[in-house]
Image 1: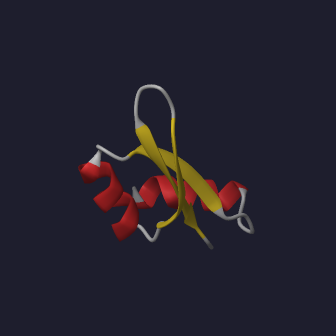
Image 2: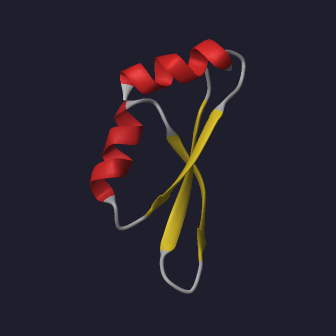
Length: 57
């Protein structure tokens, strides 16, 4: 995760990062939180609930 974030920051250094993850995926959410992402919203579709996460750089 650290490698991916550093590569993304090289090409987009001033942009905040945004991702969407299914709320049932607790392992991924923990990984993203440890990497500095915070929950900024949530939504549902016909199949699952999702959470939107942001990381400011």
